[in-house]
Length: 205
Image (cartoon, rainbow, N blue to C red; front, side, top):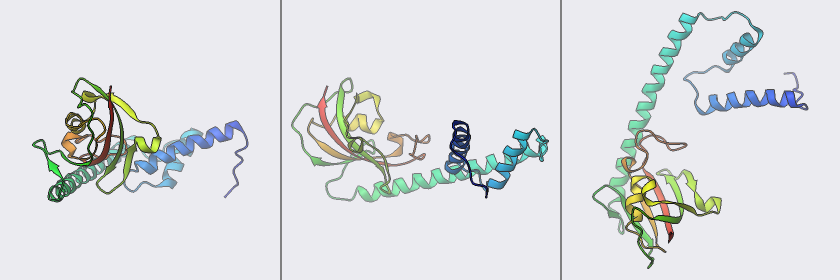
């Protein structure tokens, strides 16, 4: 393999373009993706060479892979939903866990004596969010900066819980997917994910 010269702006930008494409393929790889074929396609396009695959064959293959990816995504979503339901069913049996009519579960870690916010209020909080496997997807504690937002402007599980909390309280929330991001998911949160949050209500603004 020829050693790359990455000492110039041009070569570094060229490498960066390749990195970006590689990141995309790593994070969202089509089933059975071939790096050799990807590189061949880039090389042919860059050189202006004729495509080695006809447009008709390419479109047909894209349709096959797209369908396969949709099936796999649906299977993953259904599995996540089932895992979430099972987790919540077991969690509800634990001492100290309160189950609300909406399906939201919580346990009180620290009891505060401050005011309770309304839906129209804004609040300042610290929080730590994980999936049920413990994977962290967001944490104001890790950022070292509390978060401020309107009570009515967050996921439904938070909106419900915050209105029950006194300022100074810290609760652990177990949020069903339908009270979180549902079938869409967001960022590193997969579709139909049950979420766990430690939420500290610092102040009602």
